[in-house]
Length: 412
Image 1 (cartoon, rainbow, N blue to C red):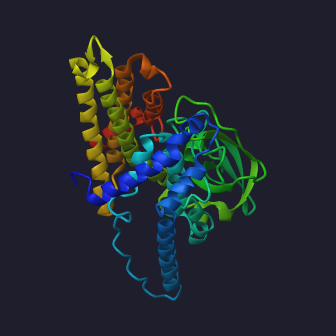
Image 2: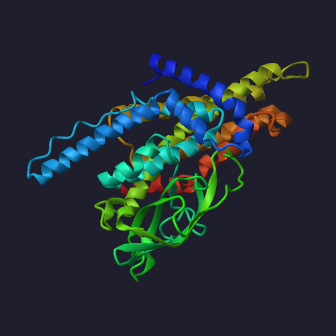
Image 3: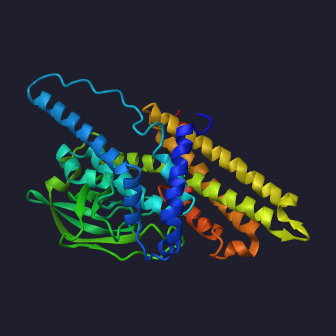
């Protein structure tokens, strides 16, 4: 894939119209935290049939799982699985991400964690009953989801420093601990809570388990939104668990011994998150470049438009190089998805590392090009620069991506 197809362009234009009509007028409310993004996201899903498509895909998967289970129960050979193919028309699902990130990147984070990370944690390892109970509402955005792994003392060392615990109590578990920097945490209806099984052994030897929690459970407290540098349209909060009692039905997979283990399940979720950052970065880069080109044509200094000065031209040229490179990474993601293939963790890390750095550098250069105006909130490059920076931090910092890539290279 080397360019957008006619179908892609048609969908991009339709999404742009939705963004212009439904989101741009509310950017100030979203930015100031006065308007949670979820109702607008639900309208987006309904407008483009994303909720209906999610229901259809979900129904087919559940029917397949039940058919296999019935065949196994009868002692028969289960029907062969159909070849995995990209289910979104060759990457069409990335287009709303790109277009939303041109205006309000935080909305993508809120959407991606809910219908992406949280639902994937359940869909990949959960039982059929658990998927029916929780996942569909997340996939359609009917309910808001949160994926809780980061703790106040952990950061990049998510597993090694994890202190949240699950203790067996008869047929139930008692959960304790706290999480921070949790996207959608303040408003989540459904939360995947990742912790360690306390069996009296050393913390580093403990199993990692995931439980599904729901708003209002006794002992489960969700904080108000935290104030942060950027991504204001993505509510972020803290979670506190004090002797929260849950049954085995809330343990994802309903077993402590999943074949891939809790750590691998969480890493697979990180992999998905990292590969999606390129689409977010592309939206930010495209918008910053468009705004900068317009400003370079309109802004007059020393008797001529600043776009005629070579230093400004260099900035614009470097932005365009970054746009082309990030777009090519997005195209690769789309092609792999259409072929039913997933990136390795190292590949996803490399894509995330480059794209996040490119978006941050372009956004800061856009501020510089705008001069004093770029530092003012009236000019949108100020918001985009604040929003871009977190791409180098969440889903694993730049430093963590470098470690993942280098380990893969040295392993060869």
